[in-house]
Image (tube, rainbow, N blue to C red; front, side):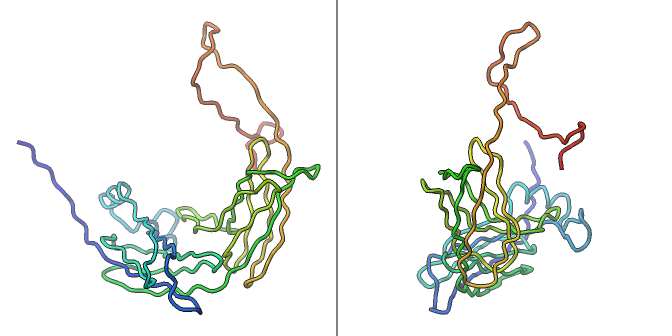
Length: 239
């Protein structure tokens, strides 16, 4: 006979309503993210005990779904934590709210018109780059334990063009990745309202490193993972 101890933690429910100036917003993507680190009390202060943390790591408090025809979605059995709730429906700007969830709670997120970033991705010689992954990231947000908020992403077309819809107000950077190129970054993008912002990203061709991995006897070894690490001149770590 085996005996096991099961730990049950209290759960809460969250009802989210989404609206805009035109009324109820159905089919709105709602993302709920729980925070397990109390950043206000120090970089390594956890809201949870060790046992609770292990349980939540197996069942991370991160959920998402879409609002129904009435602009409503409900999340049940949530751990009592601090949460950030995001609502997205381009071309409207992302709306968000932070809250402490203890028991049943209902909130309404109001979406307003968002900005449009209309961009192009080129090589140094002016050729369009197709299929590059373009991501919008917040400037100066890199605190330990903080999960970046979800923001618009896009892929450049055959003409190198991309559109980032529903950009909320704030300070942003654009990070662009494409096979065979060094990562491109555009900084200093300031968004204030529902405006159209033109952006050009220039990518530099990356170098190619070729090699063969062999064992002690000199025979090639298949299936080995190889990674290249950047170092600064003089042998120190890159910054």
